[in-house]
Length: 248
Ligand code: ADP
Image (cartoon, rainbow, N blue to C red; front, side):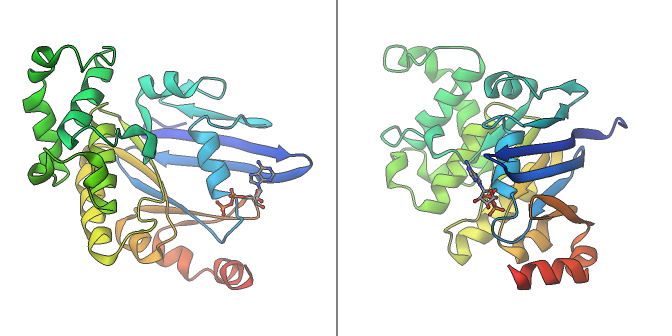
């Protein structure tokens, strides 16, 4: 493995009662790139993503992050190493304001407990940092709104801000554009591009025009296996990829 590979898998495989959903997948993700995992429905993208984020345990194969074998580690341990999954709705507390949500995330990173209801004075010291993060995701004007009142796209931007509060080296994004209207897609795409300036990003995404405009590298899965790899023009002109999408 070369030094510029931040995350790799070898022969990653998971079997559900005899059905092989991810079948011998080997990936190499280069540091500082936006890497997309695509493929027709049922290809194994979500399962693969859940293996990488440690929500599922592989039947066989290995996952290596920054030279560490993380195959058997728990999600929280992997997050401490700098590999963090975003877009878990649970990461946002609906009745806290956008600003409070980011402050809680910052406090979590520092190993603090969730005692925000008691130590407002202490948390106030985190305000500047939290405001900077809200600014980075375009939510400055929404700082005082409860998360539940934000639009869907802005809620996702807030999730990114809470994830960035953990200062991850690598972000895993699970369908960042799912359920979004055109304007939100543009906003989140710009945000992903900005965030990728000093981070590695792996995303599963169905919106192929987003994949085309954002990704440096694409892995196409079909029936649990890697079908093709390369940049968008390479994979989108590959007859096997076209066939897999049409036949799906
Ligand atoms: P994708 O995200 O590419 O649409 P998935 O990873 O969701 O594909 O699913 C890949 C295949 O694995 C599908 O055929 C799905 O039915 C199957 N699968 C996923 N999870 C399970 C499970 N827990 N038990 C049995 N089969 C599963």
